[in-house]
Length: 251
Image 1: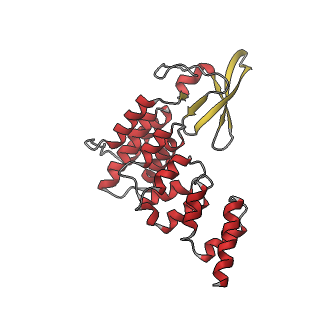
Image 2: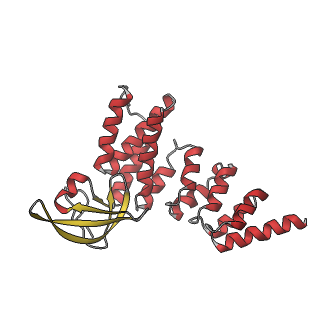
Image 3: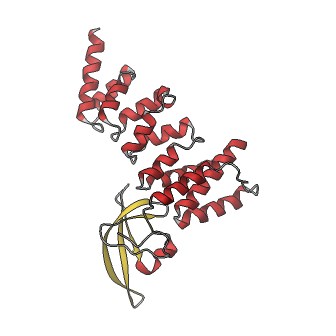
C-alpha cells in the first residue's frame, strides 16, 4: 500500500493503484532507473487501466505532477459533501479566467478540487446554458471522478441530484464503467424509461447479463438485428438477439 492519504509525496510499490491527473487510475508496473542529463533518476512505470497507456513518472516529482493514492471512506464522505453543496457563490468572472482556475484544480489531481469544479459547473448550469468550453470542462471533471477506482466516488457522481439524463446516457455508453454504477442507473425508474439509456445498458458489456437480457425486450427489431451480427457483445446476448429476431419473424 502507498503512504497514508494526506502526505505530500506518497510512496508506491509495484502493484499499487494510483490516480494520475487527467488520465484516471493506473497500476504501478515497475520502477526503472535512467540517466537523465548526467544524473541517475528513478521512475514509476504506470499503466493506465482505461487504455493501457504507459507513463513514466520521476519519483522525485510525484507531488508536483499530482500522482495520488486511492482515497478512503472518510475522504469519500467529503466528496459527497462537496457535490451536494448549494450555497456556493460561483465566480462570475469571464469564462477564460474560470477555465484557467478550473484547469489548475484539475491538474492537481485532487479528488476534492475536481469535485469542486464539477459542483461549480453544475451550479452555473442551473443559472444559464453552458458554453461549449464549459460543457467540455464539466465532462472532464465528471469523467475523472467516474474513473476513480473507489466505487463510492463513482456512486457519488451518479447519485448527484444535479445530473441529467443526457449525462447518464453518456455514462451508460462508456466502456470504463464498473458494475456498481450501472446497477445504480438500472435501479432508477425514471432513467430506464429512456429508450436510448436502455439500449446503451444492453450494449455495455459491464451491465449484469440478467439486466441486459431483460432490457432487450424493449429494443426494436433493427437494434436486435444489429446485436445478432455484432462481435462486440457477449455470445449470450448475440444468441438471444438472433432468437428474438427469429421469433418476431414467426409471429
